[in-house]
Image (tube, rainbow, N blue to C red; front, side, top):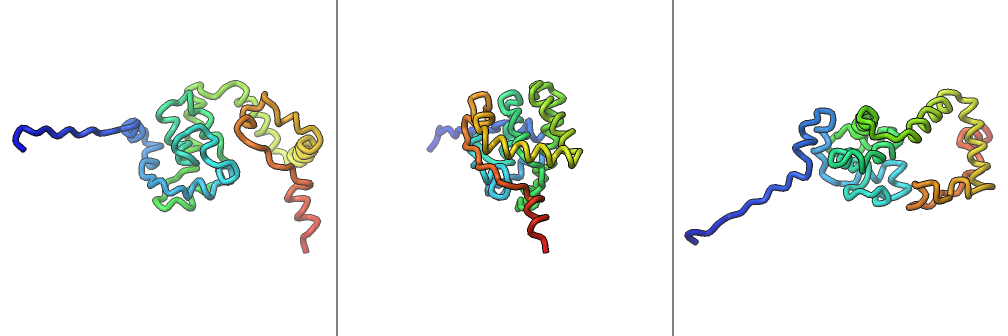
Length: 181
């Protein structure tokens, strides 16, 4: 085969850029096993493809903003940061820490809209006060049962692609206090 040519195409797909970001470099070790998505309380309930990204689950929420911060700025916020994903990762990627770091980076870059910033401030004040938290939980469960249109409407972008679960009759704390021995 004299005179034959060999063409090699290398597809980077943003890996060099991710490699250049020390806080996110570890994410490139992902073997796409899906363990993080299967254990994540958010993705386990909703399924990964409802989050408009080819790579589903928490690892996708780390990789996607690297490609386009504006388009995927919501993904790192679709997590509880409970750490379950990091615990089950077979290659020991610190997924929940990277998700938190993306939240910080997206905020620094101005990619988080005003409504989300305000919602996070309100959430911070509610979560830091147990009495307010319990009251808001009761009001939220009541509203979901009695006025579902308040959440299940076209104004809620999350609801456009997902079904809302049925609201529980009581909180876990209420159930526990009633049933503990």
